[in-house]
Image (cartoon, rainbow, N blue to C red; front, top):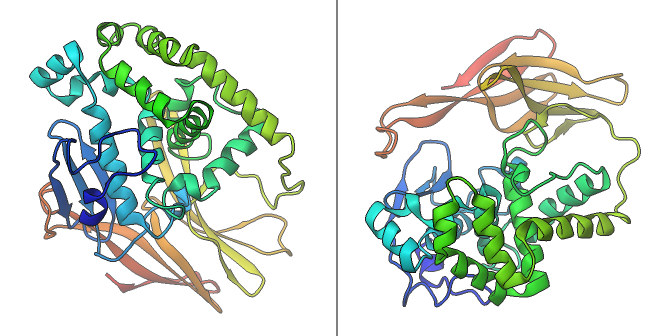
Length: 362
């Protein structure tokens, strides 16, 4: 992690000069969160937090983001990019930030899809094999949505949480749009846009009531087009590329839920876990987690088990038994963020014939 951060000076980075010489020094918090890994940029303090269950390279969200095995490096650079981005201010916006902290950084008022897209772009500069823009999954999602004519209408819509696949789609839209701007205008002009936005008094003063006014004003000065029009151009480009995008004509199943475990097979039977959210009313929902099996002889997937606690890790099937883990929590972990509370798991064995569920390891 420290090696990646020390030499954060990638060729096409939007933040120059390199980290060791001029960018603000950051505090890295490496905490034990139990059997869970994640990372975040703490806006108020300017710190970077990494929660890791081990010091080996670990990918905690493979089924959602399809990143790669460089997870610790990727996470560290992603969160550092957030902090460098938020600190990119000058003039009146910089003075305001100096008084009230990064929560009032002009950059903080960009659409969430752009904020995350910039960080995904930076993480993907580590090497051709690291970062979510180098895997192909994000591009495949965008082309599929373009083919089905279901792309988000606006940049703001791309930043909203919805029930549509995939979870956290603002990462997908933001990364794709930033990559488009970089390919069309070059990294220097994209960096100039962020720099100008960070010094724009108009953007700072209009963010609370008319965020698009300041954003589009800076975009027109740098790109000669509003960001709204550029987003429309990007959608047209995706639709053009998607004209030759060939999708399976007869999918096994079209689901209104998210399949969030790696698919597991035993002989001719497929096993997977799914999560489904039910919206009872505005701002209120509950989620269920289920295990299913499916084989060519079945007309539809068959429900094995439904729980309120999420299943974690991979499924393993051996004959009549299915092995899986569910998430739990316990005190005693070396962290201060959650007051020593960390994630634990229970390992179960499920008998597919008798439907008996037994705890093997707590």
